[in-house]
Length: 204
Ligand code: AMP
Image (cartoon, rainbow, N blue to C red):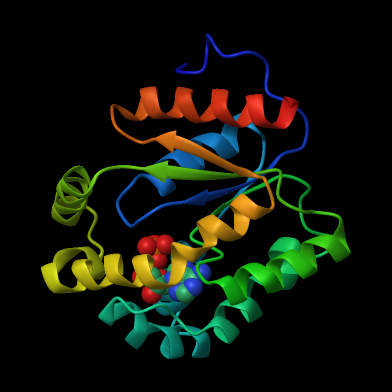
């Protein structure tokens, strides 16, 4: 086990993975969810399941996803607010890919306060531009995701991140729950770094 040399995991924990496309949010999010016995919530995965299932929501979201645009806030909030952050949702969760706009973050916060499920920490995964593009190109070769294939779509997803999602860093910094983590290195190294940073933060 890669987390053999980590201390025992703390109790209920609620995390958000933040960072540009390709930085490793999904990979790390799944592993963190295992360590903290938390529900892993990837809105990208949920949306792809809606598309594959041929639902109304899938049909509405697909054109945005294909272009690399963010899906409109109302569609995303309708899909996750009650289910993921409602009073009967699991106490521990790892959010991956949601919220992605300040409007989503504010709506999520209101729901989380009402349900007593506010975030403990936001992990900002940080990697320089060249390493990021390299990771995205590698993923494009083997993920089977349509939006990873096309260079222009990938570039547009990075622009969407820069314009609409990056402002969340300031939003969470102001709430004093932002934890910066260097995403360079192997998945094991990054996982270890995230766990230590998060656990230091929640024990403060
Ligand atoms: P991901 O797998 O997280 O990279 O998401 C794939 C695509 O789904 C994104 O490029 C967006 O089109 C859409 N998407 C996922 N999560 C969100 C969100 N929280 N807000 C808006 N669009 C989203």
